[in-house]
Length: 240
Image (tube, rainbow, N blue to C red; front, side):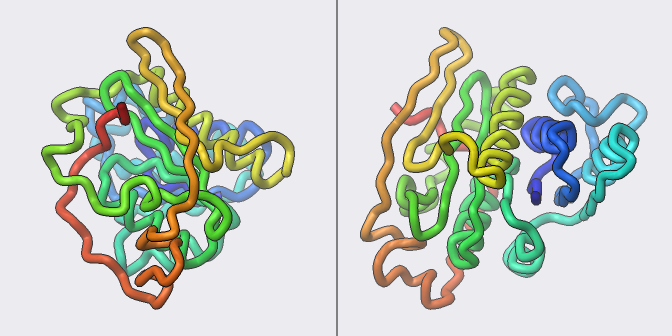
C-alpha cells in the first residue's frame, strides 16, 4: 500500500493499515511537522516539530508493529517521480492536500492501471471515492478540467476538523483493505461527502465519462501526454 501525503488523512490511513496487518506500507511526503498540524496528525507529536512527516510516521508505525516493512520517502510527489513511486504498490491512497497533486496522481494511476482512493478534507467537509482504472469513474470524469483557485476552499482559511480528517483517512484505509481482500463493497462509481456540521453523509452516483480526458475513449492521456501542472490550491468546495 502506498500512502501519498502523511498529514491528517495519511497518518490515520497508515495507522489503520498497520493495525489491520498490512505488511508493507509506503509513505511519501516532502513536508515537515508544524505546530498547527498536531491536532489532526495522529503519528506526530510536539517533539517532532521540524522533522520530516514521512520519517516520523515511519518510526511511529515501526514502534507499534516491529515486523512492519515501511518505506518512507521524504520527497514531494511530482511528474518526475510519480510513475516510479506508485509502481511498486498494489493500491494507492491519495491523502494529499492540494488539487494539483490529486490530479497528477489520478492521471498517473489511470495510465498505470493502478487502483486508488481519492479523498480530501477542508473545514468541516470531507469527500471520498475509489477509482478502478478502466472500470469506474475517475477524478477527471467528475472534474475534466482543473478547478480555478477561486473555485476551491482554502485549508489555510477554512482550517481542518481533526476528527473528520481521521474518519476520512481511516475510511481510505478500509477501502484499500476491501480491495485487497475482495470483501465488501467499494466506494466506486460514487462520491461520498460528509458535512460534519449537521453530521450528514451524502452519496452521489457517478459514471465513467466517454469524454473524460484521462480514461475516456481516445483520451489524450492514453497516448502518453501529461497535462501541465496547475498552480497549487487546496481542495474542492463541497459539491452542491
